[in-house]
Image (tube, rainbow, N blue to C red; front, side, top):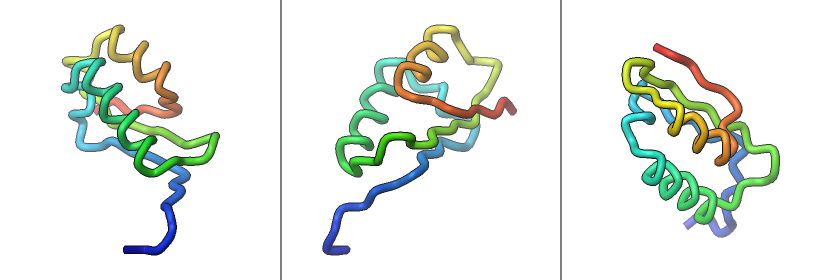
Length: 73
């Protein structure tokens, strides 16, 4: 509808619940968004996380996917 592809410079997953997704679901979500919107290199990727359910596996996967900033709430 916009007539051209969107090229986001940032991706923010908020609400303190992104880490309620399994690492595999996180991969599917982020890969799907990147495939759909085709961001440039250097995408700023941030997430608001719940430390009560945060796992090292989730952190590792998010880092592999390019997470650049996180806030713990």
